[in-house]
Picture 1: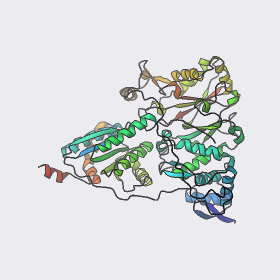
Picture 2: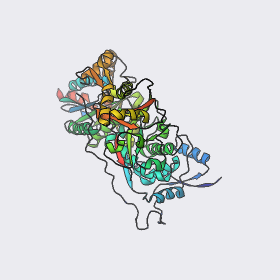
Picture 3: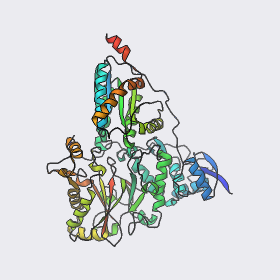
Picture 4: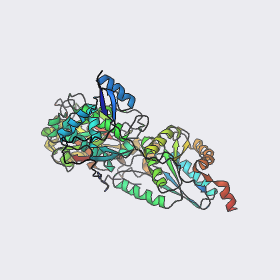
Length: 188
Length: 377
């Protein structure tokens, strides 16, 4: 057996932010930003319902931003749009991680929000939960908050998806570190 | 939304110049330890090293050549390259891909030292933001970067462009393609089931797809030259695998092109998905067919136009759910057709293949990955 030394072919990123970042806190008067995409109608339906719930919880506004092509001039336009969107909100809810590339871009955009110190939660379906966390760690922020929706999701009909949205809202609030009760008391 | 045309961004790869060691002694004269990678003690027998590398997560299952310091230094010195040059930052880790890492992975893949300029150019090409490697390395799709080679380097490296050029021709192409794949794995961090969610994968995710153009048999200018780069060049394309087109009937140029174009337009390709705003398509025309087409169509733009027109679907042919989504996005044109690519220029054509003719090959695109052509220097 001839042994010797070989060179390591890999690279590794050493830096990592393990903190989940700031809590969303009381929602009263806050502007919530929801990042949607061009792929998942179920995520559009859920976002609509969550937007209503956020407003009921006292959010002053809910804004949407839709991700589309991420290369070429279209990609540059998207990048400018994302930056403007993030500058206009107080809290970011970013989805939907429900495939390979869309998980990559969901986490990419969530990391962009978190880098601005916005309270940020990425939203993934269960099949892509670990992937989202792995990509977040490789992006240097393993602490990224990830809220998990059931999978499969987009294959379901709207009458099945709407209850999922309502059922998950309270759990989303917990993931975000948001406080509805405090907000309601403040509003009262 | 309306038709999104493909236009390159202004964001271009800027390789950060960085020197870790002095250049004073030249690439093969330094006695200092200028290779920055950690060393691992291992059994250097190929089978035992391969088993060791698989345990480390470095391998693809095929035998690997141990990247010893001697092999790596020799590879570098034969190319007169310094190991610490950063060629690109590769997603998803934004990891620094240095010449040293390219060489280590090329040694493991069994690629020849003469392939280093091609591999460096290929890494530069796939790292361009417009290539969209971020999505490509993570996707559920089966996409892998294909390398199409132009210039005299085709013959120096023995990249196939005749019979069996897409796979099966003996030569260095599979090892060169594999080297790029190992770079994706070990430097970019694309790991199946971890950072890559590809549902089915593809043989091209092991050996890559490394093909040259039969420039001497093409009636048109070489692919890279048409894309602005003369001489030695690599064109990278986000390819979903190869599709074969058989045509034993056509005689006229438009007939051949109609068969190829219509074959490209299948409903389930990414370009017709409402989730993908635009895409390109790659078409390989065999030299016999190319000669027939070239006699009547000496301008490639005319060839692309006919292919593009035929690579379309009637909106009425789609069932309502799919049609509705595309309609909402403004993808159905006034002629009632949905086109695979936004414009004729987005049909990427190259001449290669054996003299048996009869067949064309299509490589469908991942979608928003925009083809890149880079000079090999």
